[in-house]
Amino acid sequence: QVQLVESGGGLVRPGGSLRLSCSASGLSLENYVIGWFRQAPGKEREGVSCIASGDGFTLTTHSVKDRFTISRDSAENLVYLQMNTLKPEDTAVYYCAASPPNSLCLLYDIHYNDWGPGTQVTVSS
Image (cartoon, rainbow, N blue to C red; front, side):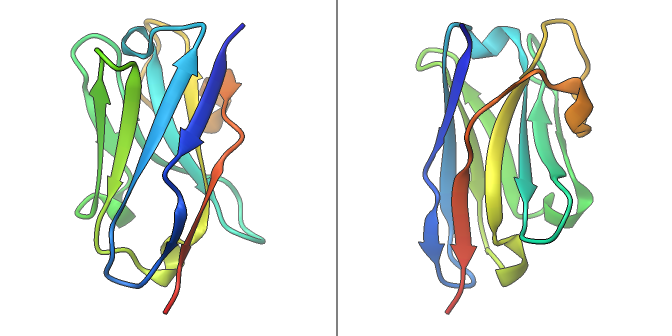
């Protein structure tokens, strides 16, 4: 059974940084496409970044690509989302999700089968 769990969320001031982690049981993250998504209150879920299996190709949505970085630690079976220069509009619940091996790194949630419960990120002074 696949289980994904996010951690690292919290309250941070504008301009601050957080690093989210996605851990997994039941699968090796390096063999899957892993995506980060977020959903703010009253808004649709938005794809933030993904990292492909194998070569580790990454894709990050334009609105955060200069501030957020996705990476993978295969030895620890973790995928990270480093978020810098956070803004109030980054406030959301952040989710990691897994897409089957050999799938594409895309920022559409329909491509992902397994989801974590989410971690809250609040950016506020």
